Every structure is written in structure tokens, then in C-alpha cells.
Image (tube, rainbow, N blue to C red; front, side, top):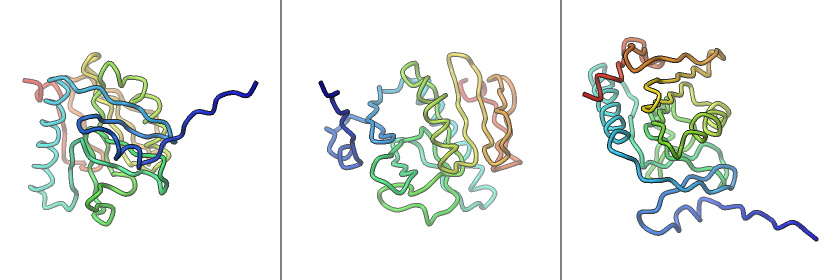
Length: 181
């Protein structure tokens, strides 16, 4: 007896989802997303504003965009993600549909339903796609794991009560616990 073939999805399937339903597409597999809670959204909002102010103050050319925002990491129709926060410094990657290629900095806020995806699947995906820096902000564990893929170094882990230097902006330090007050 032949095994059933798993359906492979494309970006067309993502755009065909009913209004209000969100999913990501990785290697042709669809991953539905649960609605975020208040703490998650507060962190997304505060981090986006903080990084955005820093960029404007320094006269930088990068864009900081919160989810929902389409990121097409690969030149195929089988991968589509919506990082919680994307910082894109090459404006040629941006168009009306989203970002075509790897953002410079990606921040994911861990939710109970996204833990495995953020720490494992997306970690490998972002590394392979050329993201320069990846942060996993984990409210439950009150820690942030930072990967500097360009340096090919072990990740650094910070508590929410420590300053974290942003790798792509050496003069920007973020203290997560202060954002939750």
C-alpha cells in the first residue's frame, strides 16, 4: 500500500487564507499562527519603537517593520515567514508585497505555541537565508538568546535584566525588562 503524499503548499495558498487567519510557510509546509497575547504585543510595539527611534536619531537608512509583514527568504514559492520584527537595511529588498531576501535583524517573541518553531526551525531557516542577527525574546523564561550568524559564534543568552547590545547598531543597548514596565 502506498503512503499518502503530504500536500505541499505555496505562497498562493497563504494569500488564499480567510481574512484574519495567519500562517507561515516553510519548505511547502503550512504553520498556522495563534493570536499573540498582550505581553507579546507590548514587546513587539516597544522594541519596534525603540529601534525605529534609534534609526531616525542616527539618520540610518534601515526600516523596522513589525508583523504582520511578509518576508520571502528564498527565491521560491514555498517559504514565507512573518517575523515579529524585521529590520531591513537594503531598501532594494522592499516592495509592496514585503521583503524579498533576508532582513538584517530578526526578532521573534516566543509564545507557548511558537517555542519549538522559534528556537529550532526558524533558527536554522534564518541562518541559512543570510539573516545577520537573530533574537529570540522569551517572556516565560525572561531571557533573550542572540545569534550573530556572521560571526559563526555560539549564541549569547541574556536575562531580561541585562543590557543587550544590538549587533547591527553597536551604540544601541536594549534592556528588555524596562520595556515591560
